Amino acid sequence: MDSEDDMLDANDLDSLDDDFYSGDTDAAPIDYYTDYDDDADDYFDDAHRIDSRRPEQNFTILKESDIRLRQEDDITRVATVLSISRVLASILLRHYNWSVSRVHDAWFADEERVRKAVGLLENPVVQHTDTTELTCGICFENYPLARIKMAPCGHPYCMSCWEGYISTSINDGPGCLMLRCPDPTCGAAVGQDMINLIASEEDKQKYARYLLRSYIEDNKKSKWCPAPGCEYAVTFDAGSCGNYDVSCLCSHSFCWNCTEEAHRPVDCSTVATWILKNSAESENMNWILANSKPCPKCKRPIEKNQGCMHITCTPPCKFEFCWLCLGAWSDHGERTGGFYACNRYEAAKQEGVYDDTERRREMAKNSLERYTHYYERWASNQSSRQKALADLQQMQTVHIEKLSDIQCQPESQLKFITEAWLQIIECRRVLKWTYAYGFYLPDNEHAKKQFFEYLQGEAESGLERLHQCAEKELQPFLCGDDPSREFNDFRTKLAGLTSVTRNYFENLVRALENGLADVDSNGGGLSRATSSKNGAGSSKGRGGRGKGSFRSSMSSRMNDDGHWCCEHCTYANVKSASTCQMCYQQRR
Image (tube, rainbow, N blue to C red; front, top):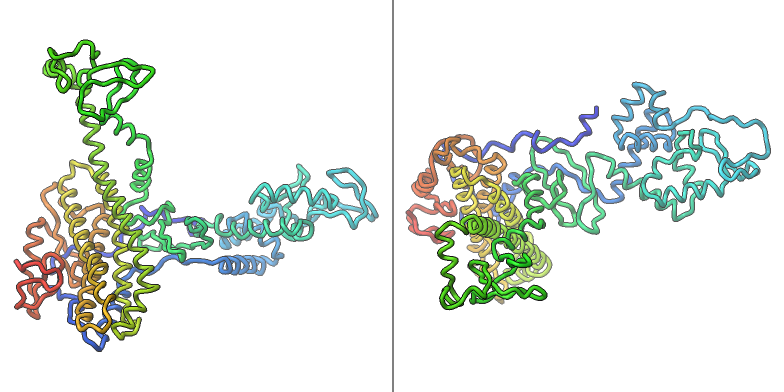
């Protein structure tokens, strides 16, 4: 039964649905591209189709009340099945990490062994004959029976010693949940009933809090949301979908496996390496190596910030030297080339003296420039995503209501705007992490790199069109005073761009999660990436065409109803149109 409670590893799961490559070049366009009717029924049909295509949620967000209810239910189940008290059932569940199935299996396999391991005694270890007083096992004072308390083992301790023992254990942390008898030779468990009887009110609350948190922290199928200040927990069922992204009610999204921010389609190890690289000192050393030289005397790195080659080291060194050849400046002058050149350096370079040093510096510069290229785009998309989150908040709290009043339409018919912004936010997150993926993509795998950059470029282009439409083209309608006849055209365009962008990113995500496996292993070209009836959706066939044939197949594609698909955005245009009605690109 242990295997049922263990978290499945991401690498052991099957891949997502069938990949998006297909040889079906006659697929019909999706309904997003049809003209919007004032009746609005078509729009809501499309919205339903959007929802139906979303992956099934495989996690549950729990509030504190939900956690407490589940915990109480598990305790009740164990107490009922094993015919024991709720206090003993709680001790058993804590020992087995709150796994009901493991408790049942272990108990019915060998009850005696379980009792011994957990500290659940059937009979007291110490028997007391009829007496009016007992000696405390800690302070060794005699007390009447009313002031003596005993764990199930029967070892007697006074109320004062019990209170000090329990309080110290609770203040030491969650270890108090496995509290045992104070006698060093005794392993009898001390349950919550003893805590409630003896501990102070403050200690009782602490103990109850530890108990509640242990239900999440000790359970392999649940975790706390890692967002600062968030009190929600998440239970996760890996299933077979392969998606480990979780979205908490606090709006924070994170990866179940590594608890970093959601990073699909990039794997956890790549994310960990990238984050470490962003914070590591190695990049500082690369910058120092690429942009500075050591003082020939004291060896401190010096950055040249002026045009002259005459460098003076900072006090207390104050050594004067030539930036090019690192020789003493006293050996330089007009005869060696002056302030802006060094004949000695040029001569030495021709003799190969500086080849190794310069090569190392050049390699450091190239490495730094490459890292900067990917990091800037990673950070830029993160910044854009944060701005989009703020814009969505503004849209939901202010603009939707305002737009509903201006256009005389119910807010339920303006959900396409929120859908667009949610898609922008998700796409910015995916696009951000594709730059981390691209940084670690081996340079020698040219075909994969070309295919990756093509998919990334198409997805990024679609996202920019969608973001611009949602951000810029909505403004005139917000600033107007009367309903606009062009608003329905805007609705059609924004809903279409949302669908197209979603398709592009679904393709990109599938390809990266498959490790770009559809590229010819010999590097001979790209696999066929023709779009399906989703515009650019998933399908099964594979071929061997490259980027050029993919574009030509899209531009020449004609549907049975006489529409042609734009090669840039896959919008289905009428046969007579020479320009795409969505992205305004010329038909080719």
